[in-house]
Length: 198
Image (tube, rainbow, N blue to C red):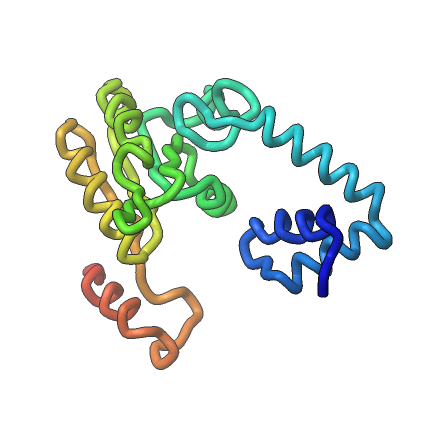
């Protein structure tokens, strides 16, 4: 079906969102135009404002409307702990745990030479500067348990070893409440390799 140029442009623009294919984008566009015009205008205005005003924290690189995010500017955070994550969404997951009170550093991705993502794109120069400040005593590598995440964690651990800072990696293994017969072999192998004495 042939759409008007502006409608086709709207559908194509909606496809930039993760998990939104041509049919979903078409349904979204029709819904906004048919019944949700005021909400669509509000969405457009909010999206425009967010794109203009949300930047990166100068310290940890997470999204922030101010120079420093609320984690970095909070006096209640433990400045000797630094948790290194791949994305701002990972911060939310760690915060929901409720027991971590340190600071963060957000890579905004992982090493992926195929995609042209190297150390520069991950802000590792900024990380090295942060590590040389003298206040950090432990870094917690909380990259994803993927091949790229593991390679990124290894690269960063080598970078941290240039400083008198303890390097730890979050544990990976069998989820609580699951049954061994349903665990994939890679996860199970990781759990066996990281087993602890009781």
